Amino acid sequence: MVFFVRGQLKWAIAHPAVTCALPATTNPDHMSENIGALRGLLPDDAMRARMVRYVETIPNFERVNDMPWYPGESFHGLVQLRT
Image 1 (cartoon, rainbow, N blue to C red):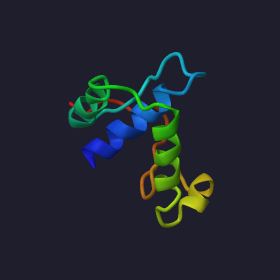
Image 2: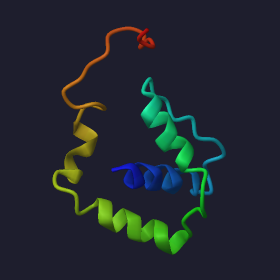
Image 3: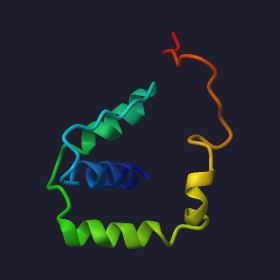
Image 4: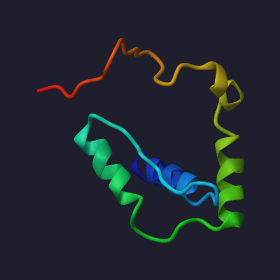
C-alpha cells in the first residue's frame, strides 16, 4: 500500500497545473509515506496515463465521486492531533 500512496501523490504533483501539493494527515506513518513521494522521478505523461488505466480497474472506482472521503469515518468540526 505504501508504494500505491506514493505513486498517487507523484501522479498528482506531476500534473502540469499543480504547483504545490499539501497532503494532510495526523498519522506519523502516513507522513513518512507522503515524504517518500519526494524520492525518485515523477511519472511522465505515458506513465500517468498507465496509472489512470490501472486505477480505473479498481472495483467501484466509477462510484468514487459518490463515496465519502473516508469511508466508515466522519469528522465533526476540526480534526486535532491526538496527544
